[in-house]
Image 1 (tube, helix red, strand yellow):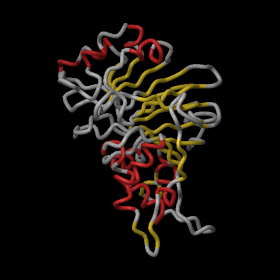
Image 2: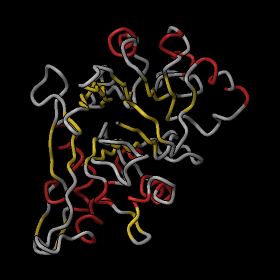
Image 3: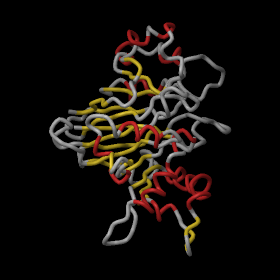
Image 4: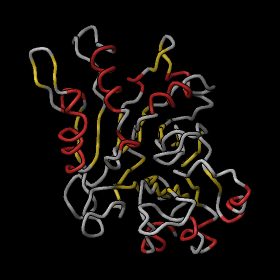
Length: 294
């Protein structure tokens, strides 16, 4: 079984629903039969990530995330970083620092190092332009990303190897380039979603990450997918860097009916958006487990 729980579902500037980061849990039997999953993957960890995890660990079924009232960071074994905006990476400094200094193996005397995965460009920039400023200085040592994480680069299909990674060998995660921020042209700033495939059944789930509306996805990725989790901006705007709700509404009903919307603004519960429950699978609810594959 593979499950997905959004720590938060809000946009970068939302205040009511925290940042849109997600916890993937891989189970051999499932949460009804196990006290903790066999493997875990965080998709991004933004500025509100620590607060969201602190809330989540108090909920039934997530107590494995608690260690003596604190966040049990070593329970989060893997991370995938979609891109470098603060609502997707700003919680990583706390996670890395806590793992290194507070969760020390008594035998090796080393802190816990989760596996971090993304494209080479994202991983290089993550350290050089974001984490290195606060984490590189250690007593008698200038640190690198590898001091805090087991670094594993992954490439989009056709751009190098490896082009995917797996949980429990059964569940495959392949990065999908997204057209999020354009410096000069589409796709010239690295940003990714994930295509998640159950290798046992062949079923797939699409996690959009942050992206502008992409018509080409409708046939190639969306139509065959079992479920779709797609970012959305509720209000129209020129040159928007997220898919507009008005754009997603033009997709066929067969696609919209299995599409859950996340990364939405604080006005989602305005009556003006009541139609979302009929036109789509709905708005993703924060800190609620969704079953991807049974």
